Image (cartoon, rainbow, N blue to C red; front, side, top):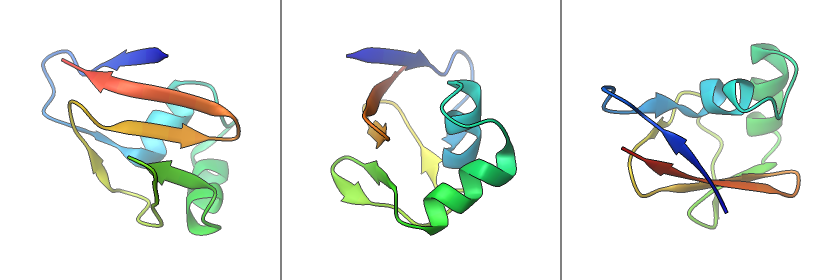
Length: 70
């Protein structure tokens, strides 16, 4: 499974993570996918666009999964 490094940041917004990983083409597309219930965080559907994703959480979308690391 892939990992995403937060670096010096405490969290990453869910919509930004989808965009940074290249899973969507734009922030608008990320927000639409989240609002439509297509994204899960730790196995549960997440509909908050700016949900704060922290170390240890796993995000899944459209057959892709990534775990957030430091």
